[in-house]
Length: 352
Length: 230
Image (tube, rainbow over all chains, first blue to last red; front, top):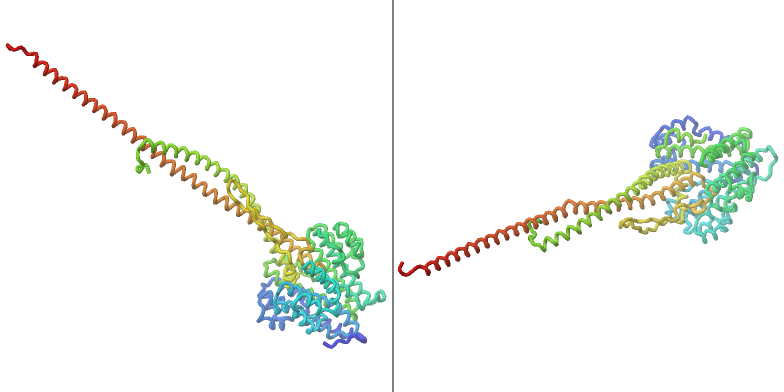
């Protein structure tokens, strides 16, 4: 992959290509059709769609809904790798920063694989080969024979230092929590790198706002999960810096009481966007509806930004989110149909 | 049996002792059977509740894991499951219910808090928490069901065994013993009657012999007293 992070960004070129890719995403009609199909029909439908190459390539190794899921992951990597290939300059940095979530995914997958003595092939199958890591780095990571080895391999990346710090905890407790939290926090912690503090109303300022919202939402979800479970977890372990809503101490205090946390969210800048989700959260016992509403709010927000600033990072970001949702929706339909969920139940879970 | 036994007074006494013992045993076993049935009914109610909980929990757990696999992906769910370090453990002790030894299963490390499940908090979602939660709940119910249903099975076996013993005593052993007792009593009565009859016969014969002897003696005496000129 040729990467040019110096010089000017090529927003016109990348956004034009992204628009054309976006037009190929499945629409509500496609989902309506798929929801009424069985798993076999869904696989056949995908063979005649954008996912044809991946379905054919993986058809000999996987079957059924597993085939669909692996094909979706591979297609996702192909599209996101293309974004990184097209982008130059600061646009590349922005996209790469965001796509590091897949680096984080891959690091966690490898560490979990080593931890459970999974085979190399099994680990490789579960990787999503996009993000900033080169194929060589990923191969070296998969070749690691111990968690320590994997941590060493990652030195020099954004995950290196946090993982080295968390390794001691891992060694003493022998659970993956410190390592996994370190990886995810490293990703979110570097999300705002290279953006700086742009002028208000500039596209990057809104992009920054979006990322801050994502960090806030992540902190909110985790705060609520801890409040619901009653576990005593220090905010230092999960709190992500960079959001606008809370600092770690505030979240720690609020996390001990769900009602107070909900009131704090209502009174925050997100109160309006999340009011319905909060009503549902207060009435239902489950957090799932609330998480669903957070995802929908993020997607809607990214689309709004994309329309306001067509020649900026915003349409690219919006496309990334839309593609991820498409993957999640197709997977939800295929897995849901396999598990015998009703059409209505699946439709409720889709994010469009 | 009644025909094999020797109709002696000693055997009659032995049989009477056995009848007494068997009747006592029968009463005790009947009480045990009734007690076991009452205990069993309690356990049965509990087992029905646990079974119904098990069905509900299984449905819920399957639904949650299906939802988690659908929304988060199979790989993410497998990954979160693989992160678990502290696996649940069970220890089994036994307790005694009316002489029936039933297991008492203690489980540890089944219900876990968010920080004990091994997966990182930051990169996972509430769906995985709910699936893990539902499976922990299911596992607890399975362990309880194993305890209650094993106790129920053992109680049922014991009730069956006790019932068979009660029935064997009531319908086989006791009737046979009573039959033997009756047979011996009849035989002994018969022997007694025969003895009396024989005694009577002997007595009559003896009297007959005595009478004959007396008659002979009288005749002889009469001959001796006849006059010479006669």
